[in-house]
Image 1: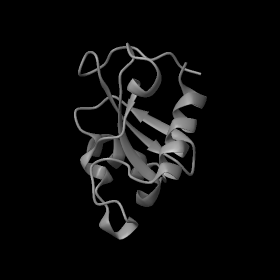
Image 2: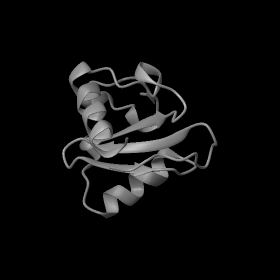
Image 3: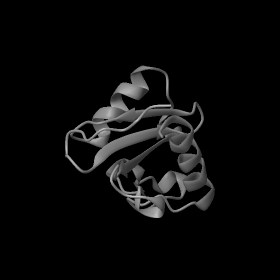
Length: 100
């Protein structure tokens, strides 16, 4: 597990989760920067979801499911938010398994 420290934005850390591989990319100016790096390391676009982490917050306020990379009409997600509760659970599970 990894402890999270304040990053590029201070109180908020941009992150991208690979729900299939259980990987987490952290801390860049744009979610797309993290996404690009993860794609170069073998992740598949359909498995990557952008989130924001707030290390000072607890519970539901710790993870915000908001990113431009989440807009994917072809996957049924027409919002910056992650709409599918099952995908949200996968994201939460990956985050919880990697961050304390």
